[in-house]
Length: 107
Length: 114
Image 1 (cartoon, each protein chain N blue to C red):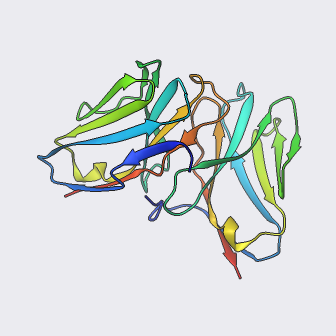
Image 2: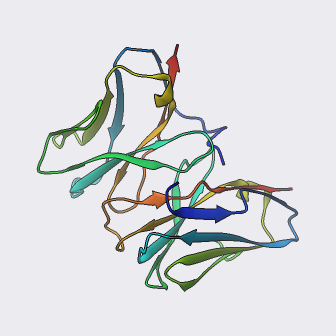
């Protein structure tokens, strides 16, 4: 299965550059957030999460930032690689997903 | 391999057909979900099951009928669908019911209704 045809915001970055993907949420009571990556032909897969008592969490090449004041999340990918090309979703722990952003990496 | 297997991967059906989508998880999880992914709404939660019991139905039309015979298997029975039901149907599972920290998704069934 593919997410082809989805009319999503698209971010195009050069290979090796850093990528920043943004997400806004509406429920101020949400206490846990997750980023998923969906590659072509696959379902979404977990990347990184963050609890509301934190404002930053780092993984391998990825960092998630949380700004509860403006209800905003961002996913930063360092040294973006062609394999990072995918659709990225933020989600709350109630199973509700954001609209998604398509990341295209230019080699 | 996520541990969640969906079949078939692709399905084409007419509006008068009856078909079923199958999902199986090998993770020992207690909760399973159906999501719809389309161009209009990227990921819509349709149904939630916890220990075989349906705990959530997000106003899904009755032409979609879920079945969960046990914690490892989930079906979506389709009947008299409309062309606008064409979408990618994703199954997911989690250790416990919502709210939950992580969902594990299958690769989906790409459905086309003619």
